[in-house]
Image (cartoon, rainbow, N blue to C red; front, side, top):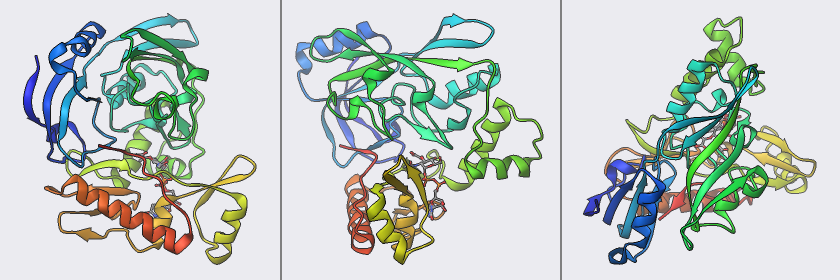
Length: 336
Ligand code: EPU
Protein backbone atom coordinates (compact mmCIF):
# COMPACT_ATOMS: atom_id res chain seq x y z
CA UNK A 1 0.00 0.00 0.00
CA UNK A 2 1.27 3.45 -0.87
CA UNK A 3 0.49 6.26 1.57
CA UNK A 4 0.56 9.96 0.81
CA UNK A 5 2.12 12.84 2.68
CA UNK A 6 3.57 10.81 5.55
CA UNK A 7 5.69 12.19 8.38
CA UNK A 8 9.19 10.69 8.47
CA UNK A 9 9.81 11.72 12.10
CA UNK A 10 9.59 8.13 13.37
CA UNK A 11 11.73 6.80 10.54
CA UNK A 12 14.93 8.77 11.21
CA UNK A 13 16.86 8.45 14.48
CA UNK A 14 17.58 12.20 14.44
CA UNK A 15 13.81 12.61 14.98
CA UNK A 16 13.63 15.32 12.33
CA UNK A 17 10.18 16.36 11.18
CA UNK A 18 10.04 16.07 7.39
CA UNK A 19 7.47 14.50 5.12
CA UNK A 20 7.44 12.07 2.22
CA UNK A 21 5.14 12.70 -0.75
CA UNK A 22 4.61 8.92 -0.94
CA UNK A 23 5.59 6.14 1.44
CA UNK A 24 5.50 2.34 1.19
CA UNK A 25 7.00 -0.69 2.90
CA UNK A 26 8.34 -3.80 1.22
CA UNK A 27 9.00 -7.17 2.79
CA UNK A 28 10.11 -9.13 -0.26
CA UNK A 29 12.12 -8.58 -3.43
CA UNK A 30 8.92 -9.17 -5.41
CA UNK A 31 7.16 -6.28 -3.65
CA UNK A 32 10.18 -4.07 -4.18
CA UNK A 33 10.23 -4.84 -7.91
CA UNK A 34 6.50 -4.06 -8.17
CA UNK A 35 6.99 -0.68 -6.52
CA UNK A 36 9.77 0.20 -8.92
CA UNK A 37 7.70 -0.84 -11.95
CA UNK A 38 4.57 1.02 -10.82
CA UNK A 39 3.94 3.61 -13.55
CA UNK A 40 2.16 5.95 -11.09
CA UNK A 41 5.31 6.45 -9.07
CA UNK A 42 8.03 7.23 -11.57
CA UNK A 43 9.58 9.75 -9.18
CA UNK A 44 12.71 10.00 -6.99
CA UNK A 45 12.96 7.20 -4.44
CA UNK A 46 14.61 7.04 -1.05
CA UNK A 47 15.24 3.68 0.61
CA UNK A 48 15.43 3.61 4.37
CA UNK A 49 16.33 0.88 6.80
CA UNK A 50 16.71 1.94 10.42
CA UNK A 51 17.06 5.61 9.39
CA UNK A 52 20.09 5.92 11.63
CA UNK A 53 22.51 7.48 9.19
CA UNK A 54 20.24 10.07 7.68
CA UNK A 55 19.82 13.82 8.02
CA UNK A 56 16.62 15.08 6.38
CA UNK A 57 17.11 18.74 5.49
CA UNK A 58 13.87 18.98 3.48
CA UNK A 59 10.65 17.17 2.67
CA UNK A 60 11.16 14.30 0.26
CA UNK A 61 9.26 14.93 -2.96
CA UNK A 62 9.05 11.32 -4.07
CA UNK A 63 8.51 7.77 -2.84
CA UNK A 64 10.16 6.65 0.41
CA UNK A 65 10.55 2.89 0.64
CA UNK A 66 11.07 1.22 3.98
CA UNK A 67 12.99 -2.05 3.82
CA UNK A 68 11.23 -4.67 5.94
CA UNK A 69 12.73 -7.86 4.47
CA UNK A 70 13.33 -10.05 7.51
CA UNK A 71 14.41 -13.59 8.31
CA UNK A 72 17.53 -15.66 9.07
CA UNK A 73 18.53 -18.71 7.08
CA UNK A 74 21.34 -21.15 7.83
CA UNK A 75 23.54 -21.52 4.74
CA UNK A 76 26.11 -23.81 6.38
CA UNK A 77 26.79 -25.06 9.88
CA UNK A 78 29.48 -27.27 11.39
CA UNK A 79 31.24 -27.57 14.76
CA UNK A 80 33.35 -24.47 14.09
CA UNK A 81 31.19 -21.95 12.32
CA UNK A 82 27.80 -20.97 11.05
CA UNK A 83 27.00 -19.04 7.90
CA UNK A 84 23.76 -17.09 8.13
CA UNK A 85 21.86 -15.23 5.43
CA UNK A 86 19.93 -12.41 7.07
CA UNK A 87 17.17 -10.17 5.68
CA UNK A 88 18.30 -6.57 5.17
CA UNK A 89 15.35 -5.20 7.13
CA UNK A 90 16.31 -6.93 10.39
CA UNK A 91 17.37 -4.55 13.17
CA UNK A 92 21.16 -4.81 13.52
CA UNK A 93 21.27 -4.95 17.31
CA UNK A 94 18.57 -7.65 17.43
CA UNK A 95 20.74 -9.75 15.15
CA UNK A 96 23.75 -9.10 17.42
CA UNK A 97 21.70 -10.21 20.45
CA UNK A 98 20.59 -13.36 18.62
CA UNK A 99 24.27 -14.22 17.93
CA UNK A 100 25.26 -13.44 21.52
CA UNK A 101 22.50 -15.69 22.90
CA UNK A 102 23.52 -18.48 20.52
CA UNK A 103 27.21 -17.94 21.42
CA UNK A 104 28.19 -17.19 17.83
CA UNK A 105 31.25 -14.95 17.88
CA UNK A 106 32.26 -12.14 15.53
CA UNK A 107 29.92 -9.20 15.94
CA UNK A 108 29.75 -8.73 19.74
CA UNK A 109 32.03 -5.66 19.57
CA UNK A 110 29.43 -4.05 17.28
CA UNK A 111 26.61 -4.33 19.84
CA UNK A 112 24.06 -1.52 20.05
CA UNK A 113 24.96 0.15 16.75
CA UNK A 114 21.67 1.64 15.55
CA UNK A 115 20.33 0.75 12.11
CA UNK A 116 19.45 -2.26 10.02
CA UNK A 117 21.38 -5.28 8.75
CA UNK A 118 21.11 -4.01 5.16
CA UNK A 119 22.66 -0.66 6.01
CA UNK A 120 25.64 -2.26 7.77
CA UNK A 121 27.70 -3.11 4.66
CA UNK A 122 26.89 0.21 2.98
CA UNK A 123 29.33 1.97 5.24
CA UNK A 124 31.17 -1.07 6.64
CA UNK A 125 30.03 -0.28 10.19
CA UNK A 126 32.57 -0.75 12.93
CA UNK A 127 33.21 -0.27 16.62
CA UNK A 128 35.74 -1.18 19.28
CA UNK A 129 38.34 -2.68 16.97
CA UNK A 130 36.01 -4.74 14.73
CA UNK A 131 34.52 -3.91 11.34
CA UNK A 132 31.67 -5.57 9.50
CA UNK A 133 33.98 -6.79 6.73
CA UNK A 134 35.63 -9.25 9.15
CA UNK A 135 32.45 -11.40 9.29
CA UNK A 136 31.06 -10.57 5.87
CA UNK A 137 30.64 -13.30 3.25
CA UNK A 138 28.39 -11.75 0.60
CA UNK A 139 25.24 -9.75 0.00
CA UNK A 140 22.39 -9.66 -2.46
CA UNK A 141 21.17 -6.40 -3.89
CA UNK A 142 18.36 -5.31 -6.18
CA UNK A 143 19.70 -3.46 -9.22
CA UNK A 144 17.37 -0.52 -9.69
CA UNK A 145 17.95 -0.05 -13.41
CA UNK A 146 17.36 -3.66 -14.50
CA UNK A 147 15.29 -5.06 -11.61
CA UNK A 148 17.74 -8.00 -11.34
CA UNK A 149 19.23 -9.26 -8.08
CA UNK A 150 23.03 -9.26 -8.07
CA UNK A 151 25.36 -10.96 -5.60
CA UNK A 152 28.45 -9.22 -4.21
CA UNK A 153 31.31 -10.99 -2.43
CA UNK A 154 33.69 -9.22 -0.09
CA UNK A 155 36.11 -8.18 -2.80
CA UNK A 156 33.38 -6.71 -4.98
CA UNK A 157 32.11 -4.57 -2.09
CA UNK A 158 35.45 -2.69 -1.86
CA UNK A 159 35.15 -2.11 1.87
CA UNK A 160 37.15 0.69 3.43
CA UNK A 161 36.89 2.72 6.63
CA UNK A 162 33.14 3.52 6.81
CA UNK A 163 33.08 2.94 3.08
CA UNK A 164 32.03 0.52 0.32
CA UNK A 165 31.32 0.48 -3.41
CA UNK A 166 27.70 1.42 -2.54
CA UNK A 167 28.85 4.86 -1.38
CA UNK A 168 31.02 5.37 -4.47
CA UNK A 169 30.70 4.02 -8.04
CA UNK A 170 27.48 2.09 -7.21
CA UNK A 171 25.87 4.88 -5.20
CA UNK A 172 22.04 4.95 -5.53
CA UNK A 173 22.07 2.03 -7.97
CA UNK A 174 21.35 -0.88 -5.62
CA UNK A 175 19.11 -1.81 -2.71
CA UNK A 176 20.63 -4.38 -0.41
CA UNK A 177 18.12 -7.17 0.27
CA UNK A 178 20.13 -9.67 2.34
CA UNK A 179 23.56 -10.03 3.93
CA UNK A 180 25.41 -13.31 4.59
CA UNK A 181 27.71 -13.53 7.62
CA UNK A 182 30.29 -16.05 8.79
CA UNK A 183 30.22 -16.39 12.60
CA UNK A 184 32.41 -18.60 14.69
CA UNK A 185 31.54 -21.13 17.38
CA UNK A 186 35.13 -21.01 18.67
CA UNK A 187 35.48 -17.28 19.22
CA UNK A 188 38.70 -15.40 19.80
CA UNK A 189 38.04 -12.06 21.43
CA UNK A 190 39.09 -8.61 20.34
CA UNK A 191 39.71 -6.47 23.41
CA UNK A 192 42.40 -4.36 21.74
CA UNK A 193 40.30 -1.28 22.36
CA UNK A 194 41.38 -0.01 25.76
CA UNK A 195 37.96 0.93 27.06
CA UNK A 196 36.71 -2.67 26.70
CA UNK A 197 39.37 -4.05 29.05
CA UNK A 198 38.66 -1.33 31.59
CA UNK A 199 34.95 -2.04 31.47
CA UNK A 200 35.43 -5.84 31.74
CA UNK A 201 37.57 -5.24 34.80
CA UNK A 202 34.97 -2.93 36.31
CA UNK A 203 32.33 -5.61 35.67
CA UNK A 204 34.52 -8.17 37.44
CA UNK A 205 34.67 -10.47 34.39
CA UNK A 206 37.38 -13.11 34.73
CA UNK A 207 36.48 -15.30 31.76
CA UNK A 208 35.85 -13.68 28.41
CA UNK A 209 32.75 -14.70 26.47
CA UNK A 210 30.73 -13.39 23.55
CA UNK A 211 28.17 -12.22 26.11
CA UNK A 212 30.61 -10.44 28.43
CA UNK A 213 32.19 -8.50 25.55
CA UNK A 214 28.77 -7.55 24.23
CA UNK A 215 27.70 -6.40 27.71
CA UNK A 216 30.89 -4.35 28.10
CA UNK A 217 30.36 -2.64 24.74
CA UNK A 218 26.72 -1.93 25.58
CA UNK A 219 27.79 -0.36 28.90
CA UNK A 220 30.45 1.82 27.26
CA UNK A 221 28.14 2.97 24.49
CA UNK A 222 25.36 3.78 26.99
CA UNK A 223 27.66 6.09 28.94
CA UNK A 224 29.22 7.82 25.92
CA UNK A 225 26.56 7.89 23.26
CA UNK A 226 23.03 9.28 23.49
CA UNK A 227 20.16 6.80 23.07
CA UNK A 228 18.31 7.83 19.89
CA UNK A 229 15.03 6.79 21.54
CA UNK A 230 15.56 9.65 24.02
CA UNK A 231 17.74 12.21 22.21
CA UNK A 232 17.68 12.38 18.42
CA UNK A 233 21.08 11.65 16.83
CA UNK A 234 22.72 9.56 14.15
CA UNK A 235 25.86 8.38 15.94
CA UNK A 236 29.11 9.76 14.61
CA UNK A 237 28.19 12.66 12.38
CA UNK A 238 31.71 12.93 10.91
CA UNK A 239 34.36 10.40 9.92
CA UNK A 240 37.68 10.29 11.68
CA UNK A 241 40.01 11.98 9.16
CA UNK A 242 42.93 9.99 7.78
CA UNK A 243 45.97 12.25 7.33
CA UNK A 244 49.37 11.66 5.75
CA UNK A 245 52.04 11.17 8.41
CA UNK A 246 53.59 14.46 7.30
CA UNK A 247 50.46 16.53 7.85
CA UNK A 248 49.86 14.69 11.13
CA UNK A 249 53.42 15.40 12.36
CA UNK A 250 52.85 19.13 11.80
CA UNK A 251 49.69 19.11 13.91
CA UNK A 252 51.27 16.95 16.60
CA UNK A 253 54.11 19.41 16.98
CA UNK A 254 51.67 22.02 18.27
CA UNK A 255 49.31 19.53 19.95
CA UNK A 256 51.33 16.63 21.38
CA UNK A 257 48.24 15.24 23.17
CA UNK A 258 46.20 14.71 19.97
CA UNK A 259 44.22 11.42 19.94
CA UNK A 260 45.31 9.32 16.95
CA UNK A 261 45.80 5.78 15.62
CA UNK A 262 48.29 4.57 12.99
CA UNK A 263 46.58 3.78 9.67
CA UNK A 264 48.85 1.78 7.40
CA UNK A 265 52.44 2.84 6.96
CA UNK A 266 52.00 6.34 5.63
CA UNK A 267 48.83 7.54 7.26
CA UNK A 268 47.44 8.36 10.70
CA UNK A 269 43.78 8.44 11.68
CA UNK A 270 42.89 11.31 13.97
CA UNK A 271 39.92 11.31 16.39
CA UNK A 272 37.49 13.84 14.94
CA UNK A 273 35.87 14.01 18.38
CA UNK A 274 39.14 15.32 19.80
CA UNK A 275 39.50 17.97 17.06
CA UNK A 276 35.92 19.15 17.57
CA UNK A 277 36.31 19.24 21.34
CA UNK A 278 39.55 21.24 21.09
CA UNK A 279 37.84 23.68 18.73
CA UNK A 280 35.42 24.35 21.59
CA UNK A 281 32.25 22.65 20.38
CA UNK A 282 31.76 19.79 22.85
CA UNK A 283 28.48 20.11 24.74
CA UNK A 284 27.55 23.32 22.92
CA UNK A 285 23.78 23.78 22.73
CA UNK A 286 22.01 26.11 20.32
CA UNK A 287 18.31 26.24 21.17
CA UNK A 288 17.05 22.68 20.78
CA UNK A 289 20.07 21.10 19.10
CA UNK A 290 23.81 20.92 19.54
CA UNK A 291 26.93 18.84 20.12
CA UNK A 292 26.69 15.93 22.57
CA UNK A 293 28.32 16.54 25.97
CA UNK A 294 30.10 13.16 26.18
CA UNK A 295 31.21 12.65 22.57
CA UNK A 296 31.83 15.64 20.33
CA UNK A 297 31.49 13.53 17.18
CA UNK A 298 27.75 13.23 17.77
CA UNK A 299 25.29 16.00 16.90
CA UNK A 300 21.99 15.91 18.74
CA UNK A 301 18.40 17.07 18.29
CA UNK A 302 16.81 17.68 21.68
CA UNK A 303 13.42 17.92 19.94
CA UNK A 304 12.04 20.12 17.20
CA UNK A 305 15.28 21.08 15.43
CA UNK A 306 15.22 21.11 11.63
CA UNK A 307 17.63 19.18 9.45
CA UNK A 308 18.98 22.38 7.93
CA UNK A 309 19.78 23.79 11.38
CA UNK A 310 21.80 20.69 12.15
CA UNK A 311 23.43 20.82 8.72
CA UNK A 312 24.43 24.46 9.28
CA UNK A 313 25.89 23.54 12.67
CA UNK A 314 27.92 20.78 11.02
CA UNK A 315 29.23 23.29 8.47
CA UNK A 316 30.28 25.67 11.25
CA UNK A 317 32.12 22.80 12.94
CA UNK A 318 33.86 21.85 9.68
CA UNK A 319 34.94 25.49 9.13
CA UNK A 320 36.12 25.87 12.70
CA UNK A 321 38.17 22.63 12.73
CA UNK A 322 39.67 23.66 9.39
CA UNK A 323 40.63 27.07 10.78
CA UNK A 324 42.14 25.58 13.94
CA UNK A 325 43.93 22.52 12.54
CA UNK A 326 43.87 22.78 8.74
CA UNK A 327 41.92 19.49 8.61
CA UNK A 328 38.73 19.21 6.58
CA UNK A 329 36.20 16.91 8.28
CA UNK A 330 33.92 14.78 6.10
CA UNK A 331 30.33 14.04 7.08
CA UNK A 332 29.53 10.38 7.71
CA UNK A 333 25.73 10.66 7.54
CA UNK A 334 23.72 10.85 4.32
CA UNK A 335 22.27 14.29 3.75
CA UNK A 336 18.92 14.42 1.96
N1 EPU B 1 37.71 12.15 22.04
C1 EPU B 1 37.83 13.42 22.55
N2 EPU B 1 36.68 14.17 22.66
C2 EPU B 1 35.47 13.70 22.29
C3 EPU B 1 35.36 12.40 21.77
C4 EPU B 1 36.50 11.65 21.64
O1 EPU B 1 38.90 13.87 22.88
O2 EPU B 1 34.49 14.44 22.46
C5 EPU B 1 38.91 11.31 21.97
C6 EPU B 1 38.83 10.26 23.07
O3 EPU B 1 39.39 10.71 24.22
C7 EPU B 1 39.57 9.10 22.50
C8 EPU B 1 39.39 9.26 20.99
O4 EPU B 1 38.92 10.57 20.77
O5 EPU B 1 40.94 9.18 22.79
C9 EPU B 1 38.46 8.20 20.42
O6 EPU B 1 37.15 8.35 20.93
P1 EPU B 1 36.09 7.15 20.91
O7 EPU B 1 36.66 5.96 21.57
O8 EPU B 1 34.79 7.66 21.41
O9 EPU B 1 35.97 6.75 19.38
P2 EPU B 1 35.81 7.64 18.08
O10 EPU B 1 37.01 7.42 17.24
O11 EPU B 1 35.45 9.03 18.41
C10 EPU B 1 34.75 5.72 16.64
C11 EPU B 1 33.56 5.49 15.79
C12 EPU B 1 32.33 5.19 16.65
C13 EPU B 1 32.63 3.97 17.49
C14 EPU B 1 33.88 4.26 18.35
C15 EPU B 1 34.30 3.07 19.17
C16 EPU B 1 33.92 6.79 13.76
C17 EPU B 1 33.52 7.98 12.96
N3 EPU B 1 33.31 6.65 14.93
O12 EPU B 1 34.55 6.92 17.37
O13 EPU B 1 31.27 4.85 15.78
O14 EPU B 1 31.55 3.64 18.33
O15 EPU B 1 34.98 4.61 17.49
O16 EPU B 1 34.89 2.11 18.35
O17 EPU B 1 34.76 6.00 13.32
C18 EPU B 1 29.36 5.66 14.60
O18 EPU B 1 29.94 5.39 13.56
O19 EPU B 1 28.19 6.13 14.62
C19 EPU B 1 30.03 5.47 15.88
C20 EPU B 1 29.49 5.85 17.03
